[in-house]
Image: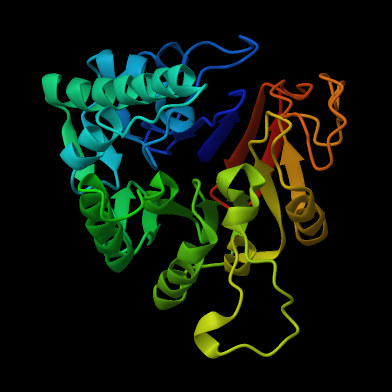
Length: 338
C-alpha cells in the first residue's frame, strides 16, 4: 500500500509518503501552526528514509526539513538547483534601497538567507547525497512505486540560471524561485498522484508534454500548485482558438475528470478567488483549512482611500490536521481526514 499524508502547515506545505517497502519520503515541510502534530523528524522517527525533497528554495516549503536533515538519518536530498552558490550569494547580497521599510526588508532577506545557508550547509556537513532533478531525468523506482519528474524542463532551468547570473551583475531582474519548482508524479498500480509544488503556469506545458511522452495514467489525486495563486494557472477561455503551442495548460489537464485536489491554503491570501471558482468546478477540492471563511477585519485601519486595502495575515480556521490517502494494491483509494 502507498500512503500519502498532507499535513497542516499553516502558510506552508508538508507532504510525507510511506512506500510499500516500508520506507518513507518527505516532500517539503513547514511546521504546524497549531501544534496538532509533532515535528516531521519525530513523526517518522525510526523509519528508513528513502529521500527528502525540497521542491524549490522557499522557506514555507523547507523550514520544517532542517530538523530532519540534522537528525543524521537522511541519505539523499533531492532538489532542482544545479547551482547552489549563485542562489546563496543572491539572497545574501541583494541590493539595499533607502526606504521607510528598509529595515523590515533587511530582516526578511536575512531570514531567507539563513534558511538557505542552513539547508545547504547541513546537507554538506552531514555528507548527505545531494541530487538535482528536472524533467530530463528518468523515473526513480522505490519498490513498485515510480517517481516521475515532469517539470521544470532543462531548458527552463538553464534560462533561469542565466537570468540569475545576469541579475547578480545588475543586468536583469532576479528570477522567481517558483520557476525552479519540481512537479512530481508518483505512480503505483497504474494510479498517479500529481504533486504540483509552487509551479507557475509557464511550466505546466512542459509537464504536460512529459506526461504525454511517458504515457502516464491520468492523475486521480493532485496537489494544487502554489496554494491556488493566480500565477500558477492559465485561466484563458478554453473554447477559443489558440496556436497549438499557446493553448492554456493547467494541472488538471494531466488528471482524470474531477480529480481529488488537495490545496494548502492556510492564510487568507490564498487561493485566488477566480482560481477557487474553477477548482470547485473541475475538482473535488479538499483542504486542511476552511476555504469559505472570511477575514474578521476587512479594513482594520479604517482606510478610506480609493483602491486602498489592508492585507490580512491571519490564518483561516483549521478543519483538519492531516488528510491521508491510501492507494491499495488493487488501485482502490481510501481518503481519511484527521
